[in-house]
Image (cartoon, rainbow, N blue to C red; front, side, top):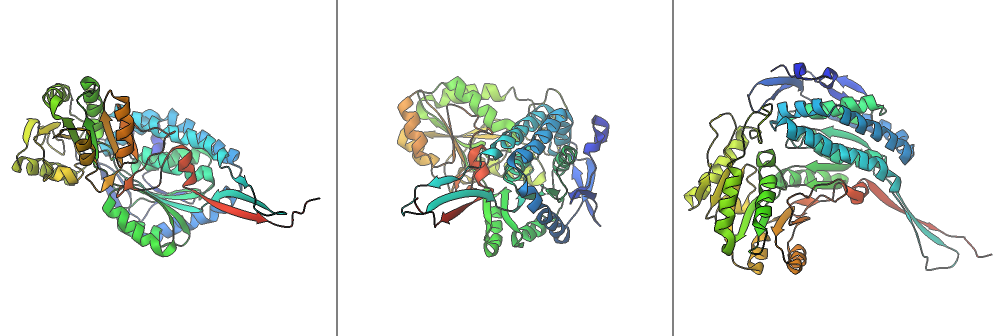
Amino acid sequence: MILSDKLTNKSLLPNKAYINGKWVDASKSFDVINPSTQEVIASVPDMGAEETHDAIAAADGAFKDWAAKTAKERGAFLKKWYQLILDNREDLGIIMAAEQGKPVKEAIGEVLYGAEFVEWFAEEGKRAYGDVIPTTTHGSRVVTMKQPVGVCAMITPWNFPSAMITRKMPPALAAGCTVVSKPAEDTPLSAIALAVLAEEAGFPKGVINVVTTSHSSDVGKAMCESDIVRKLSFTGSTKVGKILMGQCADTMKKLSLELGGNAPFVVFGDADIDAAVKGLVAGKFRNCGQVCIAPNRIYVQDSVHDEFVEKLKAAVSDIKVGDGFDEDSDIGPLINQAGLEKVQDHVQDALDKGATVVLGGKQHKKGATFFEPTILTGMTDEMKVASDETFGPVASIFKFTDEQDAIDKANDTIYGLAAYFYTRDIGRVWRVSEAIEAGIIGANTGSTSSEVAPFGGVKHSGIGREGSKYGLDEFLEIKYVAMGGIEES
């Protein structure tokens, strides 16, 4: 595949990194692979700590002038960027489908979803309000103001290569920060294309920098150990998040960590079963199950277990697996061989410990890293799925008895990113929402992501929030000013 031949705007593929307003190469490069075909579709600069420090220095040099702009002025740049993303959404979707594997229609949907954060923070930056606090002494006043934290480093994952950037960069930029971004090795092209459009939108040089690399640990360490970088935002595994958190300790950075999940999906006996099946299919199989908030442990009350499984089997049987460029494809491949092997390991472990395959269960006949949409029943707590995120198209179904049993099972994990449950009882909606330990709750819905809502987890799923008014605060510091000598007349 010659990817540029599929694009209307061929300038979106410079295949270079972006530092201090310039498109730059490195002495080495690495290949970007289409997971559907295993073809090399591009080669990009393979950068290290030296280039990362160059990008940090560029962001530092641009910070003062960028922070000095009014929120309205910064918002104008973001609005231009937003419109350019919309104008190029089909090409951005094609690029994403080629490097990540998801169907083009789903990729375009991600581009549009991600663009909503750019628009939101273009406006929300104007609302970084301070306060006048009632004082406790005469002749004094107490005020607070919010100011940008400074240079921000961002490390984004491969499963949402566009939306994870547009969830992180816009609030930082709106707050007055400058950024250095490192996209995932598997999917750097979407980040590069967004940088092309940011340059076209007129962002001053140094405000946005993109470092491409296959040496993620070296670049990440350089970001963490730099005293210039005052904030790190990372989305990825809990294991890596903990390493980065430790590396940031000496420089006392502000952190946003959106880490692993192990989302429960609970179906109570009084639920609308058809709605629950629809919600599960949408949440579990989107992006081939490679979603941090995807349901991983599906708990169905024993009274409706068989009905739920029967209806789920019918729905999942209709899912079409194929290349992202096939119009009828619903899901694409897993991102790489390691991803395939993990899914295979989880399925085999479940079967070895007594699970039953209702549907699928093996590598798809298309080969490569395609895997069949799978349903497993008879799951138990001893199986790997119970404690470890599968990150693949496998619906693993457990049984439960009553409400307290469901809550106990849902909370029996070190993770706490997302959780879902279905019930018609409004009292139960409140009780279970309050009792489940997760940062995001879907009650009678599998759709929870929005630019107006705070996204993030608790426990080992991370710290901080993205999106919403709370997402802007992640890139701001609160300054308190005590004023004396204000005597009464």
